[in-house]
Image 1 (spheres, rainbow, N blue to C red):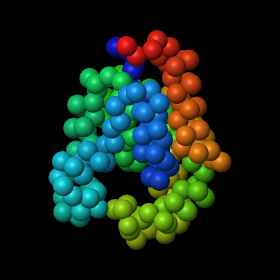
Image 2 (tube, helix red, strand yellow):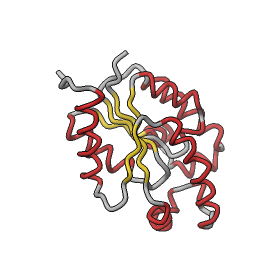
Image 3 (cartoon, rainbow, N blue to C red):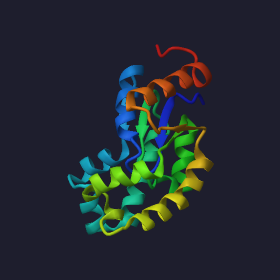
Image 4 (spheres, rainbow, N blue to C red):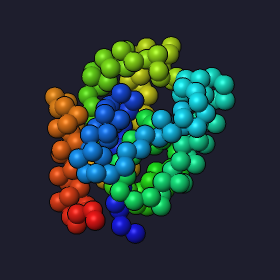
Amino acid sequence: MEKTNIVLIGFMCSGKTSVARILANMLNFDFIDTDILIEERFNMSIDQIFNRYGEAFFRNQELQIAEKLRNDKFKVISTGGGMVLNPDIMNKLKVNGTIFWLKAPVKELLKRIDQNNNNRPLLTKANSYEIHMLYKKRRILYERYCDYSIYTGQKTPKQIAQYIMNIYKKEVYPIQKK
């Protein structure tokens, strides 16, 4: 199967959604944000879903979305930061997707998380050490599953999207979408 989808993975607040929106627009692909799909399905925020149903329920929703996306084409998919925790999800996304890890500097992530932690259920009471440890644990998985890692320090979302688009068009899928 052709790998026509672009899948962005990375730690929370690494810029996946911002980059995915820009990239989808540049390529004229559909934009998918797995967290937004889950929020829309339940008409609740991620935090509310975690509080009401628990993390296991949320992770199962991610698996269902990955199952549906594995047959889609020409999508730019922004994943939740924890989707890499489930090998089944990652294997489904790899079926027709090229996976790009947005590798943001930890200091930058901490700054962004501090500004956005009210929307991050795993971080509502976490300190910088706990966030650092969570990043360290997930970094191994990001490295394992990515086809390309993109260092995002000192780059705008548009620059990152342009870089990914160039790789995609040159190395992954050199034929233009019809």
